[in-house]
Image 1: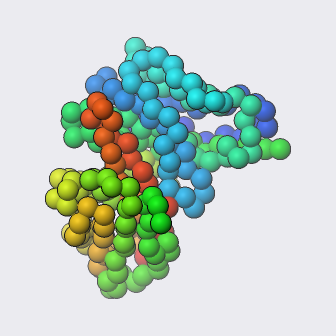
Image 2: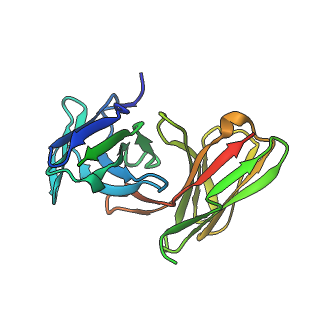
Amino acid sequence: QKEVEQDPGPLSVPEGAIVSLNCTYSNSAFQYFMWYRQYSRKGPELLMYTYSSGNKEDGRFTAQVDKSSKYISLFIRDSQPSDSATYLCAMIITGGGNKLTFGTGTQLKVEL
Amino acid sequence: ETGVTQTPRHLVMGMTNKKSLKCEQHLGHNAMYWYKQSAKKPLELMFVYNFKEQTENNSVPSRFSPECPNSSHLFLHLHTLQPEDSALYLCASSHPLASGANVLTFGAGSRLTVL
């Protein structure tokens, strides 16, 4: 079993849709949960991070963590074509070398 | 220049060639990383350097040889590679959050093709 599972997609949605991107994980010691966005021919860039369970909102983006279910989500409201990218979830066990464990990434395409 | 810069952006090499990838960061970070990104696979951590000292070698084959002459520069020397080494090689640098967790800033990557 992989430590972090993420559906690679591709996921195609119409402009304006609400997008839900998800990851599940197996190690309950993960404490920080991050979402990176990677445009084609670019490196990943940090979008948001959350600590432990709960929600965090930043503009059209909401990150949600449910540690009891070992499940994290990224919601994108009013999706735009510029949101088309690959979204990678990543997690850290702090104090354990602080190494990031990544999911495979979900490719998202927002169509006009 | 700002951020993390990687050169070359694209590299094609034969299995007997020797080449190097270069990474430079202008963020004042103390940690630098090499990751391998292959299609449909999670990012694979290869090497970590903290204050120029290698602190992580994730069982990487010796045909990949890292070098970190200072906190701003990182190299990946390549020799006698295999076709399965074809991938996007990402460099990153990091700063710690107050908790100690690291936030990575990535370069655009070097796309390597081994013939």
